[in-house]
Length: 291
Image (cartoon, rainbow, N blue to C red):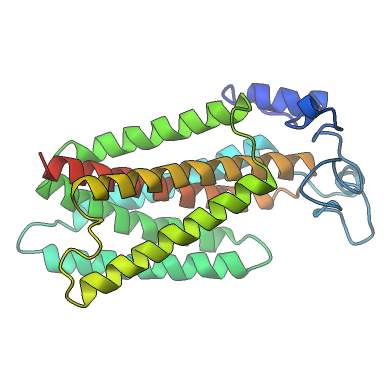
């Protein structure tokens, strides 16, 4: 798997040599793609093989272009760039001063709902839709822009920059840990993350219900030490999802996934990075509010 991106060049070189995360355990490397898929992988058969049972190389010779790491990088940059552009525009065009805060929050809530619907539509589609993914990114950016502007205005002017830098730091840390194989993404790891995320989301729903029905501060996840602890758990979950995203990208490239799958990789990475950013922003907001 070739890439001109210097950050990921070693990752690409590993795949070219036929090495992968299973090498240390003596199994056939992830890069050794056959019709049935790499030995010791997550699939019994190649999920990207054609209906005729052709291996990915034969599909490429037949005209299908396989996904590369550069494809993922370009599409992820495009999607994140859309989020950032929409966030900046909404920050500038939807002020959160006393005269406009209601209107701006209304736009943010509407954008969040639309982004959620678009993400669900893409999740249940069998193929990637760049229009849906970029639409999700644009509306998510509007929501993030208003929330970030309000946080910067009413909590701390520098909190947004800190949250962005924190998101980059977490992402870089997970990438390094994944590349060094300090994090091993296995079925057990994925199951644990799924269970933890389910519990986390259920607590969020319960907290919202308690707040909505007059329980004041809900379950206490919005302030104090408990709020910070809950936010840190959210960041760790986001980091775990990022490791899962890296594993999915690596497997898709090893199996010779079609180029269109790069949009799905970009979609997953963007959702995870948005999650991490919001959780870091939550922790910083609580910390600055209590000091």
